[in-house]
Image 1 (tube, one colour):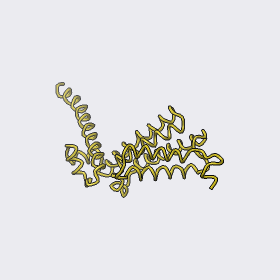
Image 2 (image 1 turned 180 degrees about the vertical axis):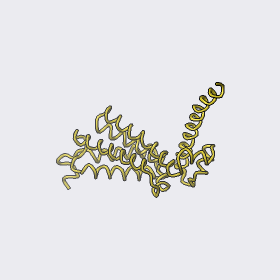
Image 3 (image 1 turned 90 degrees about the vertical axis):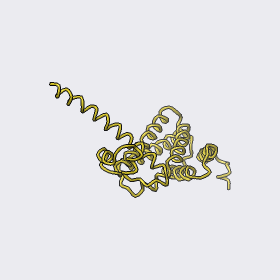
Image 4 (image 1 turned 45 degrees about the vertical axis):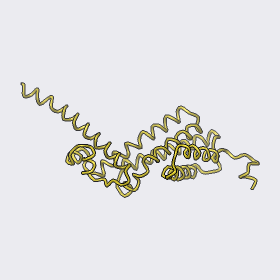
Length: 202
Protein backbone atom coordinates (compact mmCIF):
# COMPACT_ATOMS: atom_id res chain seq x y z
CA UNK A 1 0.00 0.00 0.00
CA UNK A 2 2.87 2.35 0.84
CA UNK A 3 4.55 1.59 -2.51
CA UNK A 4 1.34 2.31 -4.36
CA UNK A 5 1.03 5.67 -2.62
CA UNK A 6 4.60 6.60 -3.52
CA UNK A 7 4.01 5.73 -7.17
CA UNK A 8 0.82 7.76 -7.34
CA UNK A 9 2.53 10.90 -6.05
CA UNK A 10 5.58 10.58 -8.30
CA UNK A 11 3.80 11.22 -11.58
CA UNK A 12 2.44 14.70 -10.77
CA UNK A 13 5.90 15.75 -9.60
CA UNK A 14 7.46 14.43 -12.79
CA UNK A 15 4.85 16.21 -14.88
CA UNK A 16 5.50 19.48 -13.03
CA UNK A 17 9.24 19.13 -13.68
CA UNK A 18 8.59 18.44 -17.34
CA UNK A 19 6.39 21.53 -17.64
CA UNK A 20 9.04 23.71 -15.99
CA UNK A 21 11.79 22.32 -18.20
CA UNK A 22 9.67 22.83 -21.30
CA UNK A 23 9.04 26.47 -20.33
CA UNK A 24 12.72 27.04 -19.61
CA UNK A 25 13.61 25.66 -23.04
CA UNK A 26 11.03 27.90 -24.72
CA UNK A 27 12.25 31.03 -22.94
CA UNK A 28 15.87 30.17 -23.73
CA UNK A 29 15.00 29.73 -27.39
CA UNK A 30 13.23 33.10 -27.50
CA UNK A 31 16.29 34.78 -26.02
CA UNK A 32 18.65 33.10 -28.48
CA UNK A 33 16.43 34.06 -31.40
CA UNK A 34 16.86 37.75 -30.58
CA UNK A 35 20.67 37.42 -30.54
CA UNK A 36 22.01 37.84 -34.10
CA UNK A 37 25.30 36.26 -33.07
CA UNK A 38 23.80 33.15 -31.52
CA UNK A 39 24.11 29.75 -33.18
CA UNK A 40 20.92 27.98 -32.25
CA UNK A 41 21.47 24.32 -31.50
CA UNK A 42 19.84 21.93 -29.07
CA UNK A 43 22.99 22.12 -26.95
CA UNK A 44 22.93 25.94 -26.89
CA UNK A 45 19.26 25.98 -25.93
CA UNK A 46 19.81 23.38 -23.23
CA UNK A 47 22.79 25.25 -21.79
CA UNK A 48 20.88 28.53 -21.62
CA UNK A 49 17.85 26.82 -20.11
CA UNK A 50 19.93 24.96 -17.55
CA UNK A 51 18.66 21.55 -18.60
CA UNK A 52 20.13 18.60 -20.44
CA UNK A 53 20.05 18.32 -24.23
CA UNK A 54 18.15 15.04 -23.90
CA UNK A 55 15.48 16.86 -21.90
CA UNK A 56 15.01 19.39 -24.71
CA UNK A 57 14.71 16.66 -27.33
CA UNK A 58 12.35 14.66 -25.17
CA UNK A 59 10.07 17.69 -24.65
CA UNK A 60 9.93 18.88 -28.26
CA UNK A 61 11.38 16.22 -30.52
CA UNK A 62 14.07 18.48 -31.98
CA UNK A 63 15.35 22.01 -32.56
CA UNK A 64 12.95 22.96 -35.36
CA UNK A 65 9.89 21.97 -33.33
CA UNK A 66 11.17 23.98 -30.37
CA UNK A 67 11.83 27.06 -32.52
CA UNK A 68 8.37 26.67 -34.06
CA UNK A 69 6.76 26.60 -30.63
CA UNK A 70 8.81 29.59 -29.44
CA UNK A 71 8.15 31.86 -32.42
CA UNK A 72 4.46 31.01 -32.72
CA UNK A 73 4.18 31.60 -28.98
CA UNK A 74 5.53 35.11 -29.50
CA UNK A 75 3.11 35.87 -32.34
CA UNK A 76 -0.10 34.51 -30.85
CA UNK A 77 -0.52 37.25 -28.18
CA UNK A 78 -0.04 39.83 -30.94
CA UNK A 79 -3.09 38.45 -32.74
CA UNK A 80 -5.18 38.53 -29.56
CA UNK A 81 -4.03 42.10 -28.88
CA UNK A 82 -5.28 43.13 -32.33
CA UNK A 83 -8.65 41.49 -31.77
CA UNK A 84 -9.02 43.24 -28.42
CA UNK A 85 -8.25 46.59 -30.04
CA UNK A 86 -10.81 45.95 -32.76
CA UNK A 87 -13.51 45.42 -30.16
CA UNK A 88 -12.50 48.30 -27.89
CA UNK A 89 -11.52 51.19 -30.20
CA UNK A 90 -12.66 53.00 -33.32
CA UNK A 91 -11.23 51.34 -36.47
CA UNK A 92 -8.63 54.04 -37.15
CA UNK A 93 -7.55 54.16 -33.49
CA UNK A 94 -7.30 50.37 -33.38
CA UNK A 95 -5.17 50.37 -36.53
CA UNK A 96 -2.81 53.08 -35.31
CA UNK A 97 -2.40 51.47 -31.88
CA UNK A 98 -1.77 48.04 -33.37
CA UNK A 99 0.80 49.44 -35.80
CA UNK A 100 2.64 50.89 -32.81
CA UNK A 101 2.56 47.48 -31.14
CA UNK A 102 3.68 45.78 -34.35
CA UNK A 103 6.55 48.22 -34.75
CA UNK A 104 7.74 47.58 -31.19
CA UNK A 105 7.45 43.81 -31.69
CA UNK A 106 9.44 43.84 -34.92
CA UNK A 107 12.09 46.11 -33.43
CA UNK A 108 12.58 43.62 -30.60
CA UNK A 109 12.50 40.48 -32.73
CA UNK A 110 13.56 41.28 -36.29
CA UNK A 111 16.94 39.56 -35.84
CA UNK A 112 15.21 36.19 -35.63
CA UNK A 113 14.09 36.25 -39.28
CA UNK A 114 17.35 35.05 -40.89
CA UNK A 115 17.56 32.26 -38.33
CA UNK A 116 14.13 30.79 -39.03
CA UNK A 117 13.36 31.57 -42.68
CA UNK A 118 14.87 28.31 -44.01
CA UNK A 119 13.09 26.09 -41.47
CA UNK A 120 9.80 24.25 -41.79
CA UNK A 121 7.71 25.91 -39.09
CA UNK A 122 3.99 25.15 -39.57
CA UNK A 123 2.76 26.72 -36.32
CA UNK A 124 4.78 29.88 -37.00
CA UNK A 125 3.45 30.14 -40.55
CA UNK A 126 -0.10 29.79 -39.23
CA UNK A 127 0.53 32.51 -36.64
CA UNK A 128 2.03 34.82 -39.27
CA UNK A 129 -1.02 34.31 -41.46
CA UNK A 130 -3.23 35.12 -38.47
CA UNK A 131 -1.35 38.41 -37.93
CA UNK A 132 -1.78 39.31 -41.60
CA UNK A 133 -5.46 38.38 -41.50
CA UNK A 134 -6.24 40.48 -38.44
CA UNK A 135 -4.30 43.42 -39.91
CA UNK A 136 -6.31 43.10 -43.11
CA UNK A 137 -9.47 43.00 -41.01
CA UNK A 138 -8.43 46.21 -39.27
CA UNK A 139 -7.76 47.91 -42.59
CA UNK A 140 -11.11 46.75 -43.96
CA UNK A 141 -12.97 48.05 -40.91
CA UNK A 142 -11.22 51.41 -41.19
CA UNK A 143 -12.03 51.61 -44.90
CA UNK A 144 -15.68 50.77 -44.26
CA UNK A 145 -15.83 53.44 -41.55
CA UNK A 146 -14.39 56.01 -43.94
CA UNK A 147 -11.40 56.75 -41.71
CA UNK A 148 -8.73 55.66 -44.22
CA UNK A 149 -8.60 56.04 -47.97
CA UNK A 150 -10.41 53.56 -50.20
CA UNK A 151 -8.65 54.34 -53.49
CA UNK A 152 -5.90 51.93 -52.43
CA UNK A 153 -6.69 48.23 -52.42
CA UNK A 154 -6.81 46.81 -48.89
CA UNK A 155 -4.12 44.22 -49.63
CA UNK A 156 -1.90 46.92 -51.14
CA UNK A 157 -2.37 49.00 -48.00
CA UNK A 158 -1.45 45.99 -45.86
CA UNK A 159 1.72 45.35 -47.89
CA UNK A 160 2.68 49.02 -47.67
CA UNK A 161 2.20 49.00 -43.91
CA UNK A 162 4.08 45.74 -43.45
CA UNK A 163 7.10 46.69 -45.54
CA UNK A 164 7.43 50.18 -44.08
CA UNK A 165 6.96 48.99 -40.52
CA UNK A 166 9.64 46.33 -40.90
CA UNK A 167 12.07 48.81 -42.45
CA UNK A 168 11.60 51.27 -39.60
CA UNK A 169 11.79 48.54 -36.96
CA UNK A 170 15.17 47.26 -38.15
CA UNK A 171 16.66 50.72 -38.64
CA UNK A 172 19.69 51.41 -36.47
CA UNK A 173 18.19 54.82 -35.76
CA UNK A 174 15.00 53.24 -34.43
CA UNK A 175 13.62 55.09 -31.42
CA UNK A 176 10.26 55.93 -29.88
CA UNK A 177 10.43 59.34 -31.59
CA UNK A 178 11.06 57.74 -35.00
CA UNK A 179 8.23 55.26 -34.43
CA UNK A 180 5.81 58.04 -33.49
CA UNK A 181 6.83 60.07 -36.54
CA UNK A 182 6.39 57.05 -38.79
CA UNK A 183 2.89 56.43 -37.46
CA UNK A 184 1.95 60.09 -37.91
CA UNK A 185 3.16 60.16 -41.52
CA UNK A 186 1.63 56.79 -42.38
CA UNK A 187 -1.77 57.49 -40.88
CA UNK A 188 -1.72 60.95 -42.47
CA UNK A 189 -1.02 59.37 -45.86
CA UNK A 190 -3.87 56.91 -45.35
CA UNK A 191 -6.34 59.64 -44.48
CA UNK A 192 -9.19 59.86 -47.04
CA UNK A 193 -8.41 62.24 -49.87
CA UNK A 194 -10.81 65.09 -50.64
CA UNK A 195 -11.09 67.14 -53.85
CA UNK A 196 -8.61 69.96 -53.94
CA UNK A 197 -5.92 68.28 -51.84
CA UNK A 198 -2.38 68.56 -53.27
CA UNK A 199 -2.27 64.87 -54.28
CA UNK A 200 -5.28 65.32 -56.56
CA UNK A 201 -4.49 68.72 -58.07
CA UNK A 202 -1.05 67.89 -59.45
